[in-house]
Length: 234
Image 1: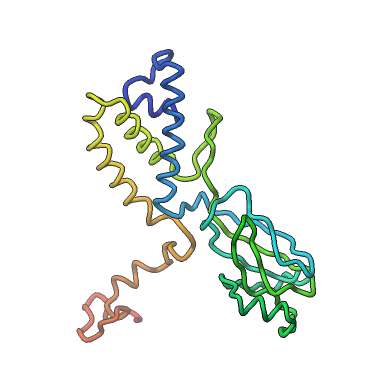
Image 2: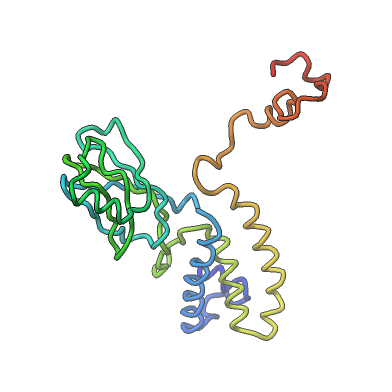
């Protein structure tokens, strides 16, 4: 990706850019990745992992490959009974802890049911009387981009465009003349690809085009159906 950015500013030939320039571009690529990664929940960035939670335990370590606020869901199932899985609710209150510690709550088969995050630890509760498996769904953190073949954890084209804008701003002078056009192009590109990112709830629904075109499937049914649809099922 360093070559992509250097070519964008006219220094992509072999031996044209100095080692200092290449290092500067690499730094701006990492910065650009951080900025672009905030633009959407990139599909390529979503992962799911399982963590064992022994009976009686209430805490697991924070995943090393993500950051605060990036965990989207925590679910659980009894390790010996993976057929049934339930979602944990975020937020453990003082009343919750008091209830659990004073044993006013009798743990059932389906525990824990709440979680909280602090001090690089994910706390869950109440403690289960059986071994439990937690499933974490979260977004990966930034890739270090230290190797020539490494790719960012978001759209690489958008990262290269943002990095070129940053490099042009650092260079100043005539380099900055191309920034407005690049900004507009990047904004348009992000508008086109962001709706395609994220979870399945954003995916295209089969038959959606038919539903949108058929007046009988719309919310407003006060008008007569168009002749082209009168012999079709609603």
